[in-house]
Amino acid sequence: MLLGFFRLIGKIFFREIVIEGRENLPASGPSILASNHPNDLLDPLLTLFFSPPFRLRHIAKSTLFQVPLIGFILRRMRAIPVLRHKEAQGPIDYSSFFDECVAALAEDDTIVIFPEGGSYETPFIGPLKTGAARMYFLARQRGLNVPIVPVGLNYEEGSIFRSSVLLLVAQPVDCSRFEALHASDPTAAIQELTAEIHRVLGDHVFQAETFQDRELIILLERVYFESQRGHDWAERYRRLGEFKPRVTELRHCCSQEMVRLRRLVARYRRLARLVGMRTGEIPATPMAAILGATGSLLAYAGWIFNWIPYRIVQWLVGRRRLPRTDIATTTITWSLVAFPLAYLAEGLLIACLFGWEAGLVFGVGIVPFSYLALRYFEWRETLGIRPPSPAALFRGRWSHRTSRRLQRLREQIMREVERFPVTPLK
Image (tube, rainbow, N blue to C red; front, top):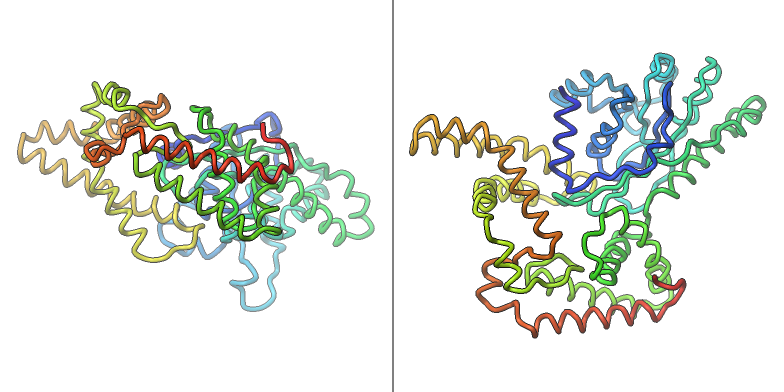
């Protein structure tokens, strides 16, 4: 039941969850899934999409087990607690922790571990702890064949509702070549295997030197390939590498050009949002918008019922500055409170106005109704007929002048990018 509930949350929060490389997962037997950890509690939630067929046992910091609701959920999901150095007061004996992990592997469970040891506010993978490597060698001493499978979590915008995420499953790490070294120098073998996990995981995660660079690279891809509508995040992710060398070169050699490029892209994004489209989409015409709005009254009704709790959650999350790693988790937490309370209040109001039968129908249908309305708007958007806001419509911001400004800005951005031809853009 908990598994289905959390997978439903993931499907609601994300516009698309793409998993590539499933064939690299073992067909049976125990395994260790080692993943990067950019987004706090959202990362383990995404790994639940590997279960079934795998019986997952997550490694979680011991302090989470002390939080009433979270601790209850972790125990129900058979998570394994670990006490981290920064939370301990003195030396730590990890033997009981590793004994529990190896015992789980012996029962053909799959261990999910985030070897960075925590979720840090960086756009790159941090140094890895040695837990996954130590677990592997301890399992081998028990005669268990336990592959280590790195899983790269690649968020489009991890803190944004209805963005996308790509899970890239790598081939299992070749651990056998470290076993001879482990017989003579266990410490060196553990460190080298950890370094190899870091290398393979890094090949399956999009990284940048700064968050500004990462955002710029993603926006450049949107602007440059704006005519290729309907491409999913997985396909766009593969194109990001074409822009990374240019941004890196600009950042290190030409600071003024970098500042100018950032300003151009920011201006393009502001203008695109003004006319009610996502950055990188072609502006819709008034006729297309009118046609797209036909038959969508029910979808707009769903939007109305969800507008108030959505704004309440935005206010609650935005009232204090949160680390990037906590925004999505906080948004989901407040949503689990605000939306049910808002639905309850709306249902009672409908029952008072139209009778308890109408209130009951509302209570039963509001969740699927809201989800279908959300999917309808997204489906219409992929066809290029997403209308801008009513304010934009009545202020005439669908003019040819605005379209020409966007086109000129796009051409100027492309000229700036192509001044640094590290590799040809396709």
